[in-house]
Image (cartoon, rainbow, N blue to C red; front, side, top):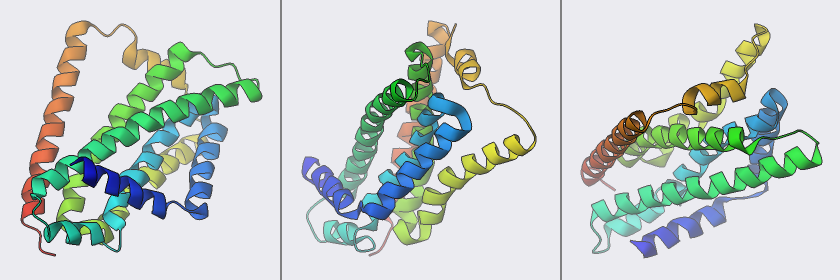
Length: 217
């Protein structure tokens, strides 16, 4: 499984080009212009959604066709993709934490880590839930058919919502939302939420395995 994980990373490395880097920078710039330094955390959702789908795009599912000819169970491929997504999320959390601190320092925009870190944690949980929905569809239909949902909805959906709210003159206080979501949460509620999150992960993996086994290449 680790070899498949390395292949996924190698494929993503080959897919990342100047156009994608410009797109990522534009997403971060849009988030910052809309919500300030705390908004940078919200770029985690669209960028992670782009990156987690990339392993499926190699030669239009070339890696998956290769795996189908090798003595590798399809469940192993599914597990490696979910592990890949998890490592991408954790890496992006560290990256955006550094970006937020640097932007806050350079642009003299005061940043409170006690607020920023929970926002990043919340975006990780939301982004992971998006992945739980995207992966079964992609394992069933492949990259070409699923990329509209997997790539554009997480990008243009939040952008459209914020654009509409701005047109209506509605201001979003990210720190208040974060405080309402994380401050004062009891241990019981946290355990309950974590249990539901893990159950959704398990259901997503189960559906992905089932749909991937039924797929023809």
